[in-house]
Amino acid sequence: MKTDANQDKLDAIAMLLIAIGESFKKIDKETEGSFLKKYSEIDWKGVIGVRHVLAHDYFDIDVEEIYKICKQDIPVLRKVIGRMLSEMK
Image (cartoon, rainbow, N blue to C red):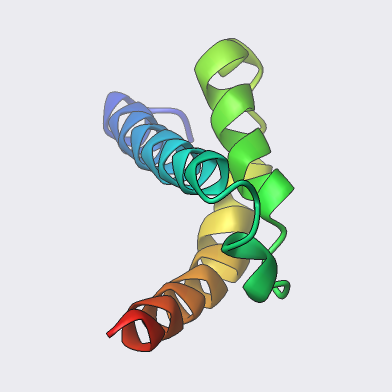
């Protein structure tokens, strides 16, 4: 059901996904692609690509795809980020 509250949630999720994609885009650029390659279980082009779609094609967002990303992909990404941080220490 489309409500203002649901739209607010979608907007917030989209902004967070944009920030995530932008951050990894910057890391990839600054490390000339070498850092993210170490964590090949993540589709980094996909992470960065979601940022592009959300930032540039916002009105064509596939809500079901965003839900899938949140439900399936974000938990895996969180684990990998945790591993990245622990390996950097």
